[in-house]
Image 1 (cartoon, helix red, strand yellow):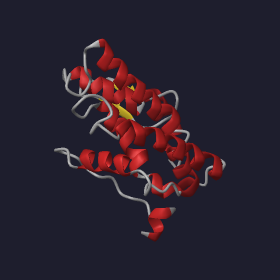
Image 2 (cartoon, helix red, strand yellow):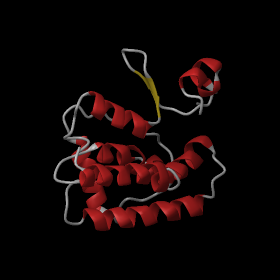
Image 3 (spheres, helix red, strand yellow):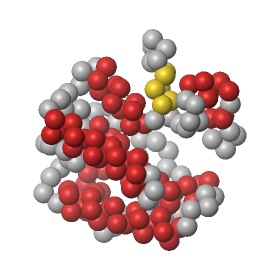
Image 4 (cartoon, helix red, strand yellow):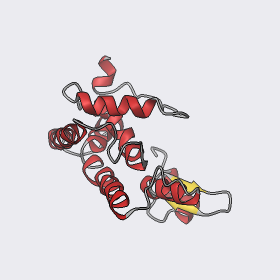
Length: 174
């Protein structure tokens, strides 16, 4: 990203929005956007355990995909952009927005293990990365026991692969 590879003509041919990630499937299908990639994989492999087919279950998952693209992107993800890439977001504003989201998630998760239903879905995957790495953007997760428990459950799933933690923000002190 820092070198601008996502703005090259070759990359823009895959995703005209110039955003990462992009998945290029074995058949050459290019899918841009992490949430679209999650839906694509669940649908392609008929994983109704990860993306329910019933109207209420599908809508509940979609709601959390929207949260990932909205509140998470403009809260904890934006806070992380400040510390890692020097983004011009207002740190107090995005950190405050992150805590508002985390409070809502904490309440939602008080009596449940997963965001939707009784098993993990692509909704849990969608929220994971920027919530798990929120401390890199100076967003403290200490007050959100249910959210932290969800993150640990996701990390305990078969095949989970962590990504490198960046030693910035609150993570630098850890």
